Picture 1: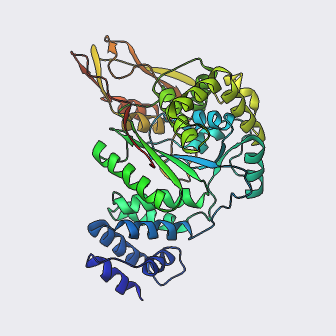
Picture 2 (picture 1 turned 30 degrees about the vertical axis):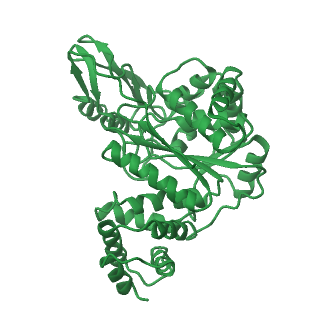
Picture 3 (picture 1 turned 180 degrees about the vertical axis):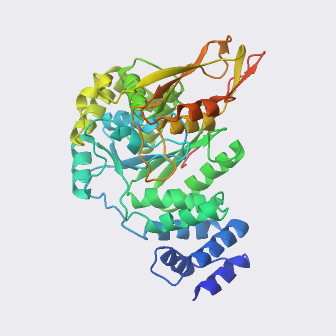
Length: 437
């Protein structure tokens, strides 16, 4: 069937067969007869008319099979992964992955880079001197078998159809289509080969979805579709109405993760990481209850086992393992500037996207995937929602590098904080949980 016939089926809001979806995905992979404008037309038809659950499953699996499917059968035991829909100051992977691995569960994780206002795990890891996120499949499997943990970059041949379709979605106003979002995220997770995937779906002004209701709908859909593929999926809907951690950048987020694993600091980042780690242990079947999972996670932090596991991973991937004992070995900024409050009152709102964009202006993020970043720069938050500040109090510190656009960052931060005479009600850190059960 030619491309026009397939577009017409979905334009009429009819259901595509699995074979027809396969033809569409092959076209996106460059193997079929679809042109870019025809792919764009199909994306728009899907965005307008939607897809049935069966169509979404077929689209997800076809996209996963469009490139390499990582075979993790040589890794002993249950393999687990975690995915976040993106946020600011979200360093959960660097906290929970070592904890889970120290509890004896195999964490075979492929992560991405930061783009726009959101940070990327790979960029954070590469701020550690010498560390490589590019491992061969054989080395990746060996590392997970030996120390139960590896966090690496996705290969270029992983779900190539998604790369082509995502680029078109960005310029055709089809980014917020639920079946397209679900298939994009899940195809990469399935191609990565994990048995258990726990999703962290963000809600709030720093999230990719416009409302908490949409975030919940996305979580439910991904869990339902993910479980239909034969894997175990679960999702937590968590708050992103302010940066999750106190640090927004790359090296400084590694520093914060180390501090949490050492037991030196607590807060929202720790709470979300601990909850996600517990859910992974429970879904992997190594504990019989979530209460037991929470106790195992607490022991991993208290005993130092989680921090030790992070050091092992750093060393295995060529990094300087001494950073877990001396964070000054991480890249350091050239100078520091403090942004001060221009008013007195309670912090009623923090524009999370503005914080992320200000960090990007300093050099912590990128506009395109080819842009270089400065691992030393970023923003250290000094306030949280509900805190009282007086005029002149510190709101955040800007860590500045040689190429930082400091004036741009300051302009972005101007207005990022809103004040109230009354203390606002605290936001819920956890909105909901969508269980694979």
